[in-house]
Length: 262
Ligand code: NI
Image (cartoon, rainbow, N blue to C red; front, side, top):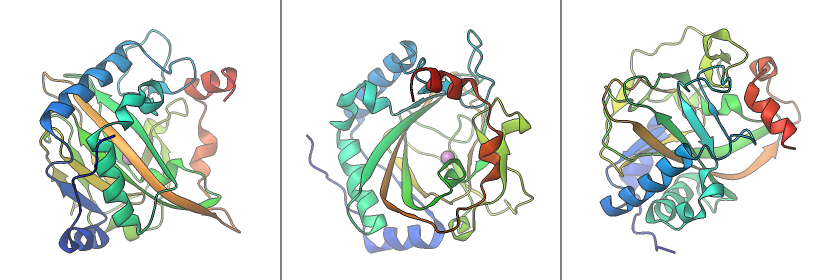
């Protein structure tokens, strides 16, 4: 198990607290990025997790046999445990603990692939809009590209300071209940948004309420992003949030998950 090599300084921690996101030039070494990339491509090619609802099209209706617009795998490290035995995983853990102010109670991951030339945009959203409205969550995400990424290939964009907002109304992308992906359904001021281009193996970190977006991939290279999430124990709310849009979901993914027993 690699030992962590990274620690944030006060300036970085303060930047995150102020803005709700942070850019780190290098989370791991270039040779490890290549190793992770091989695992990543194998998982998508083998369509792991398809029958249990862990692999699905985040932006389309996810019908069998259709080309996915935005293929996603939940918990790729469940299918390839070697992903946890990486410097990226160890460094992400340290950094998330620094920003959450204590030990993580959970560390998970997912993978979002934007295929070359047609991977569709990930519309503006806040991650907490997907989560259990019965809890206060203490969580953040580390987003690491496995190749260089810029606005043309789908790098992350953030609205600085938006982590202090409540969760805005959301809806399934395109208002289609068969789509699992969510988009903000409110007239928000996005004029201050900033792009975060990165080298392979760098990362961005964002708070569960930070508004973020990634454009389509217009390049000839697939845009592979591996996202690690960390959290501290959630707190049950007396009055749940009203994340009503979650009741609209009627996805093929949830049907597959239900018939697989969870
Ligand atoms: Ni997100």
